[in-house]
Amino acid sequence: MRWWKAVGLAGLAGVVATGAVVVRAERRRRAYTPDEVREQLHMRFAQATAALEAADTDAEPPKAHAGIAGCFRRSRCGRSQRRR
Image (cartoon, rainbow, N blue to C red; front, side, top):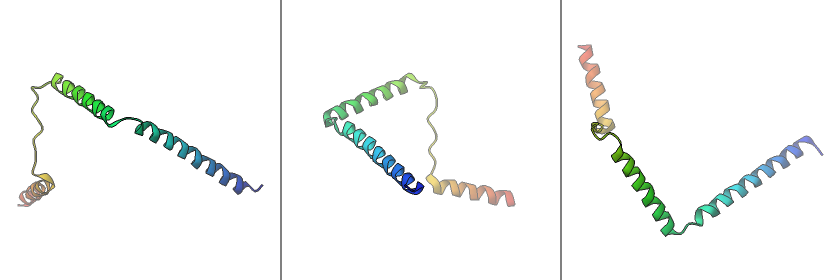
C-alpha cells in the first residue's frame, strides 16, 4: 500500500470519528423538551439577576455614546482643533 493511501484512509477515519461525535452531541441537545430548556433559561436568568444585585450597585452605569458615527465625529473634531 502506498503511503498516501494510508494517509487518506487515516484522514477519512478522522472525519468519520468527528461526525460521530457531532451526531452524539446533537442527539443530547435535542433530547431536552422545550419546557426543560425554558426552565433552565429561567434558572440561569434568576442566577444572573441575583449576581447582578449582589454586585456593587453604587457604581455608575457605563455612559452611552452616539454610536460609531458619534465616535468618528468626536475624533474628527479633536483632530481639527489640534491643527489650529
